[in-house]
Length: 345
Ligand code: PEP
Ligand code: MN
Image (cartoon, rainbow, N blue to C red; front, side, top):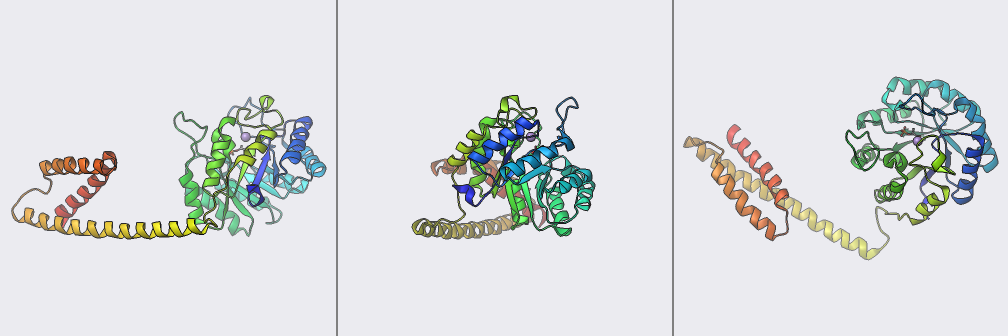
């Protein structure tokens, strides 16, 4: 099972009642036994009439889960007071939500309220795709001496109606990994999806991209959940998802696969350098044409010539199984660069 070496966090969106939390934890322990049991105490809701969590009253219930099922607890903190409360309760991990991380002053206050820097911290991406803000918050924890800092990718606010509740701009998580290569990044398919039907496909995508784990909202009965009811899943469904997920490693153990991929990559490397050589050759010729035009007082842009280029190259590209649309974009870029060089050199 792939979760032998990945992080798995599951549990309900929020602590709702003793029955709900114990029932959910019991099945999760029995069926899944994750690294952490998650549940929110303070829920930052858009609508003030929605369930905002049990707050401090729920802490004892999470303590009970920890004691009875031996499950490490993780919960969300959104201000300094929350940190003090969970530190008093003896929990050793927390996450920062997508709304909290939009305010670096709050993040500083949270850091200052931590009685030590031994906490395991998970930092969600901000609601808006601001990579620098995400990186900045992670660095705030590093600067304060925290060593167990991780990130959670939960998607970004969509400005229009989309399939998922939030936009899965995977490239932002990949950029984060490129900036902080040692950072573990897990994916929260629940908040990306907004719907239980998409949890598997998003989780598999995260595995394909070699994410370090998953945080998945799980409830003993999602239909009666007081928050995020549509996206929470039954513990036995989570179990089946985990069993079905396929891991993609960055390098295979299969010798034949590796040797073939190395050969293919060598060919691609050569071709890329040939493309650059050919581009340079093309620009040199076009510079000469530019000089000729200039000496004879002829404008750089010759529309008939451009139309002729598009027509002949388009047809040839199609024969070679390259889409006209792609070729047009490429030629336009090359042509614009030629005109720029002819005009300003
Ligand atoms: C959550 O994980 O329960 C939560 C509120 O998530 P987010 O901050 O990603 O909206
Ligand atoms: Mn939630």
